[in-house]
Image (cartoon, rainbow, N blue to C red; front, side, top):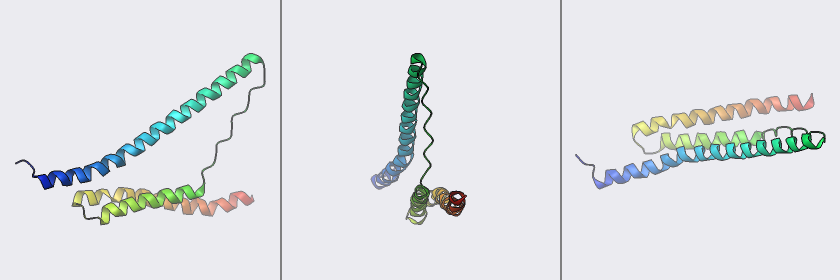
Length: 125
């Protein structure tokens, strides 16, 4: 009843990339949150220092707009990962799971196309 060595190796070969797929986004989200928290704390300290000294409070910086190319890059990456899972020689369950990144990639690409059409109209107005 115990799995043989080849089955164990195949489980590890599939498990390690899947672990990376789930771990890397979590680490990226946590790092981004940490950076944002530090920025907010620094801004708060600056504002409190300015209020204590009677100096005008510095204005908040405007949010940086996302570059349109970032949506294209994200869409292509997600679509590529999804197609690799769907078309790769994996078992049936893993191939079905590949449709999720395909859908996310397609959504990013659709958003890129829609925003690309909307972008020139807002710049000329």
